[in-house]
Image (cartoon, rainbow over all chains, first blue to last red; front, side, top):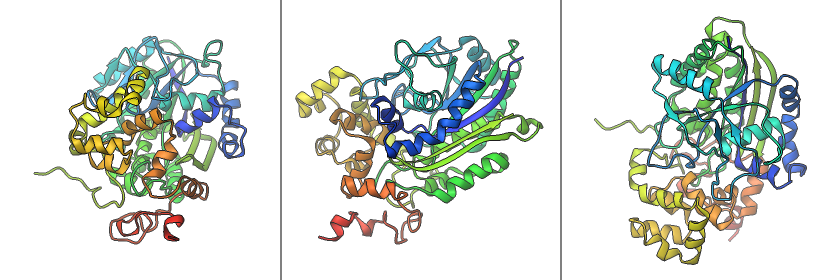
Amino acid sequence: MARITASVYTSHVPAIGAAMDLGKANEPYWQKVFSGYEHSRAWLRDQPPDVVFLVYNDHATAFSLELIPTFAIGTAAQFQPADEGWGPRPVPVVRGHPELAGHIAQSVIQDDFDLTIVNRMDVDHGLTVPLSLMCGEQDPKTGAWPCPVIPFAVNVVQYPVPSGRRCFQLGQAIRRAVESYDEPLNVHIWGTGGMSHQLQGPRAGLINREWDNAFLDRLIADPAGLAQVPHVEYVREAGSEGIELVMWLIARGAMADVAGGPAPRVAHRFYHVPASNTAVGHLILEN
Amino acid sequence: MALSRPYLDIPGTTIFDAEQSRKGYWLNQFCMSLMKADNRARFKAGERAYLDEWPMSEEQKLAVLSRDLNRCIAAGGNIYFLAKIGATDGRSFQQMAGSMTGMTEEEYRDMMVAGGRSIEGNRVVGEDGSAQAHRQPQGPSRAAR
């Protein structure tokens, strides 16, 4: 059977992708960000998964106001990097895993989560920046991401977004779905977005280092308790766009300890302010 | 019964909820159109004429023309949609976010490098933090004037 062996958590700031694409990664400002991912890149190279299930949010790219799915799973064979207005990022096409994605969709929907199934979708920086951070630069033509990726988009743009509790429960359903897949695949689940940031209004630029680090502590040791935190606390304490952090609870809910297994091993933890407007948080947990 | 909106007392912050989304539908959909290179070129060649193709309010059109993002958000815009205007203008997210504070680009960047805006005094309307209404616009260059 397939197994989830690890979860990865990371911010997905668009400026990080731009810094890599424009060759600025070695500038001191950006070096401080990328230094937190050197260990992660080696870790991923040493034990590459067969599939990454990547939880992210679309930023008014594939989904306009015409259609706003709360949870959307990408079941296509491939996904093109989107033109978000600056032109598409120069990164490889994202290969999907239609068989596993279709299996997870069927299992999770029958487990009472009403997913939207998406067979055509461009993927924006929310998905490609975590791949770039974890895998390093890839030539758009001759390069490739190390494995197939199942995009899983969560609405965190139009309020109300799903609750932390719902996300945590969904992660548990995704774990059950993966474990009911016959092929012995090594699957990672990544939760992306956050940490504290606000991109709008006179409060733009908000950072809450103390709240972010408490979030990381609780994500490791008390995810069930953390899942009870209401939306308004995220927004008030971590900024209007800090609400993205609910997506981390999907990945955390898929870890073994939530289903009675042993506590995960913390393979890596990193926190840095700033990347552009945002606090960068990063965590790797192994089952 | 009215829907609960417990976030209305957060200073300097507009949550993009169903009401804002309804108000800003065409403004945001106009922004989406700028994801196509052809549309960006057409918009740049004649902004007013391009805006007039959309059933937007006059206030929304003027807000776009003036590139006043706070005004766009008050008219129902959402920052991820409005970012397409910034992209069309060749501006970064940091430039766009900073423009809503009253700070110069340099002042805003320096604030971020120094650890960002503090949460203290900025949780609830009526406190005395930098994002409160009575402290606008912000920035040392303003305060010195």
